[in-house]
Amino acid sequence: MALISALYNYWMVIVLMMIGLYIILTQRNLVKKIIGLNIFQTAIYFFFVSVGKIAGGSPPILSESPPPYSNPLPHVLILTAIIVGVATMALALGLVVRINEAYGCIDEHELAGRDGDE
Amino acid sequence: MLVTALAIASVRDLFAAVMLMGIYGLLSASFFVLMDAVDVAFTEASVGVGLVPLLMIYTLGMTRDVNREAKASPGSLALVSIAAALLFFGTLDMPAFGSADAPAHRHTAPRYLDESMTETGIPNVVTSVLASYRAYDTLGEVTVVFAAGVGVLALFFPGASSTLDAGNPSLRQYTVPRIIGKILIPPILIFALYVQFHGEYGPGGGFPAGAIFASALIMYAMLFGLQTLKRVVNHELIRVLAAAGVLLFGTVGVLGMASGGNFLDYDYLAADAKTGQHAGILLVELGVGITVASVMLLQFLAFADRKNAMENG
Image (cartoon, rainbow over all chains, first blue to last red; front, side):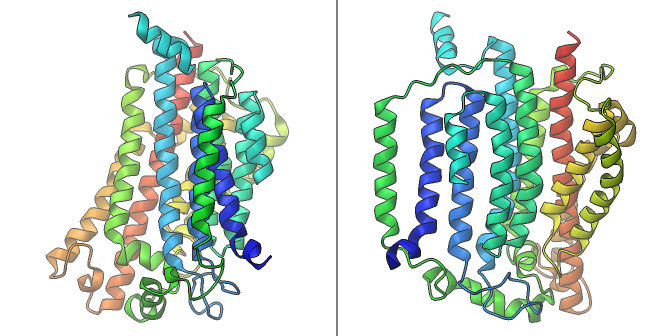
């Protein structure tokens, strides 16, 4: 029982991550694949932030609340990761739009078939 | 959150999936607050709920492809199960959640928590680590954001058109959102500036502030039409600003070097180290905020322009 409550967060992260991976593997629509990638990515954010949490801790802003403070390092990493993630996701979506303009579809199998014809 | 993720996986309608992404983002932000990561929560709330679904909707609007039934392949299911089992096995060795003496808390973190107040004089440790101790990494990340913005522009370059806004993506015809928007947008902009400049003392800083600022302007474009936004913010100006933010960051670094320290060493910017740190962090965060806000606006405008161009032939 203690084990379950101690590792519950990490297990949920694994489940989320695997849902994301499953979407990436099975979906044929490129936008849906990007959504899967996004879920995978957020699962990793959750993992890092969970590692940084200290039970009974407070946000790492000194002098406002008493110690212990949660670990600020994962926060820094994830804060920047979110913004970079969005910027690169926009790039991925841009690529999808251009693929659609060039091929008229964003279905993985159809795309592969068309490339084979040429 | 798990339920939402499962729903996203199973729902076939792409539009519904994108809407669920918004809910997922909001839940993530609440989770971050629970985990004491207030700065992260700010960023996720403005980005995950607003920008991500928005850009996805634009993409869907431009592609109009039906989502065919995904075939449930036993191979990928097996692969996913095996990966899950391995990861699960890995967690058994992890320290219990929330324990204060986990290895992650014992090396660099105490140094930052104990010393950063005397070294930088800034209460928000997340800000001081981001902008001072780890400024190199942050400079790299800002450059990545900038590069991604340039990438989107490059992808959409030939289609950069100035067609008249047909009013399609805007909600101009609805009165209630318009009035609420009019009331809300100015406070959001001011809040973004507050988050920007108060980042040293409370949760905040350049990254969330830039995202909030951009969201407010994008909301304005959605309510009053793209052309109205373009009258307010000049396209050229945002492009210049996106680069200027990175440049500001780098310049502060070089200034530190010129006045006798290392690259991005703020101690030498002013007579005493603390003032120097203050000034350095403030300037660097400003650079981050400017770049993030303008890159997000640029990307949004690129998508919106492209969509307009397609609709008008």
